[in-house]
Amino acid sequence: MEVLSLGEKIKKRRKELDMTLKDVAGDRVTPGQISLVESGKSNPSMDLLEYLAATLDVSVEYFMESEVTQAETICKYYNRMAEINLTHGDIDKAMAFIDKADRFVDKYNLSLAKARNLFLRGVYKTKMKEYEEAYDYLFKCNLIYSSISYYEGFLENFMFAGKSFLNSDLIPLALSYFHKSESLFKEEIITDEFLLGKVYFYLAMGYQKTGKLEKAKEYTRLCSDKFEKLSDRIGYGNLLTALAEDYEAKGNLKEALTYSSMALDLFKDYDSEKEYAMMEQSLGELYLGFEDYDEALSHFMRAKDIYSMTSDSRYNDILLSIVECQAYLGRHGDSLDTMKFLEKLFEEDDSLDNLHLYRLKAKVQGMMKNSREALNNLILAAQLAKTKGYKDEEAEVLILLSKYYLDRGKTEEAEGFLDESVGILNEISGDR
Image (cartoon, rainbow, N blue to C red; front, side, top):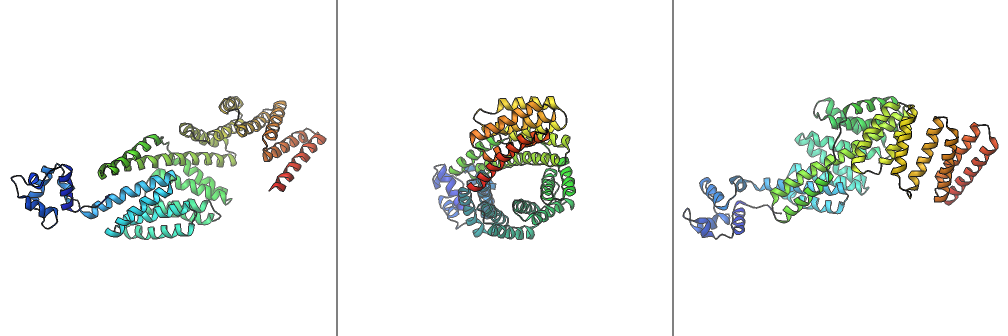
């Protein structure tokens, strides 16, 4: 992709149409005048420019577009393609697009495109776990955003930094970034309600990790009020990306930019959808911890709807959580029906899922006072864990069996299972 001067655009278009200088000149001007314009030695009048546009079947606006504007358009395309590839995890291809954009950024001194490239390099460095360099890029990016008052860029940087710190031991620093994000909404600088819901979610998660449960509950409730359901468009996004690359290969930047822009919007929707489902699942787990089973169940059900459409591997986990909530709420018929659905859903060789289901069945049957069924499911879980070599799981189930017998005053049996569990844990510790 290249930036063309006015003369180069005219010459390129003339060659595309297989026209000679004489063909273009017609009766309007001389071939020599066209040659001077193409070489940049003469600037055409507006009348001549309109004539050339009509003759070469392009718009006057195309000829009048400055080199800086062209460079900005090219950078925007490369930025979007880099972001798409970062989203897909193809970081090498993403870096190639960033490097291409940088050449135009430097040559034409493009501030916003430079900031965007710095941000994308920060994302790249984070994926490479080179955090110090990553935050250096984000800081430089924010300096540019500050100079041009681009507050949406600030929000993106604050949220990215906050989420990165949330996954480390620097939770207070993560919370500070999320509160910086929140302040943009409090001051009504940014008003997007869904984005504010995301800020509330991460504040709830941060406070939950620090043990400040009242603050976690406060932001959990605020987040719940903000969410709206998103739809899955990933397949269409892939098609648009392929079309964008095809148009780029043909040299049609306008169409390449259009399709890449559409694809990026769709992928952002898809990522938002996945993030929304993950947040709904986490909100359910938070409410489960608060023993608010009605609220937990409503969030798990929303996550289930999204995971079912996206074929997400967490769909099974959500169903297990739903069973637990239904049991706590005394909706035993619903919990049994959900477990029957899970039995059909899990494949025979999906042993770990079946093991978790056995344990859940035991828990639900225990809540329903069906002690014999609870015991049978614990035994099945222990046998499956032993057969498949799931030592950690086997030790946990043996502890549950020990508790089962201890609750019924059968001390000898309880001690036997407990000793067996301790032996397995010692064996695991020795292996490690």
